[in-house]
Length: 421
Image (cartoon, rainbow, N blue to C red; front, side):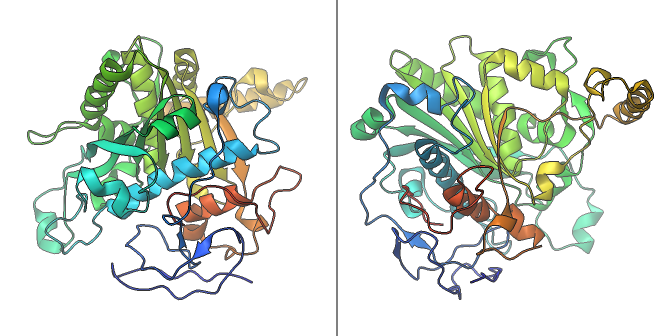
């Protein structure tokens, strides 16, 4: 049975769908869809608020699942406890999408539709055990000329709500997790100016105050702009993250604590920048881990080296069929990684690398990778670029992934999901 893709154009329309049984342990409900900036996978929304969480108890092993050993031995085959944690963090990102006002005709466009006190409850995460403590905004450094307004009716919001910080406050959940967890959840691209920032793909040097100094660290121009830009009325995303992390460390630094940053697409890139900034800024930083979905490349090999040196743990969930994970720029290995014994190949490669490097387009992949593939699932429409990048696709594939030799199981066992797909 194959799912169709049904884009959602109105905030209160009910989807049409066939009924796949890829996870028979969930209850099914015909709930309304919310606007989503990617194409909507038309499978049935899964309601879990009525179900008790059956999340695995991590206890003293929590650091393993946060990547203390770079998830060694947990990715292939995929450990069931780690699977549950990946899905759980994915649902926090999904809440960020659901809370965002996508309606360009709305007076509250590009803001959060819910107050902090009810954001998680209103987006399907009522039983998460977390409380939102801060809303986050990102500001675009790109400013369009005034004449654009006369030829386009599209809104030009420079600062947009992009996610939130949530702290685990439920004692049972803290005990299950083995520590108090702080989640920073970041959505993907939603506004026109954010799209323009995405297109600024050349590398630029990180500011010295971000701890890279003379190490030659470079990151994508547009991503850095979204992270550090500010207006008179809105602080930068960097300032907001730093302020809240400082407060969290001061409040809970005396107990086992983790900071888990999770994002999809643009949010995945900003999650990596945020993680690096936290570990570089706070010498008493708790363990910082990133779980990203469908993220683009962020920086060069020098930036990767500094990330590793800082102790930041990064787990990238990559769909082989998702083009966004293959951009921007190119990954060109150094000569010492070229084919041994073939000097002419190494020389050609060195020449090519220099050309691309002069264009500021040589990137490097970071962290550990969990690779899945849309082609392995019978429930997904093949060859659809938007579907391959959709967060729902990623959660579906992680839910069914077994190992590289058995990429997908059609009937999955039960895994916790506080938010519905």
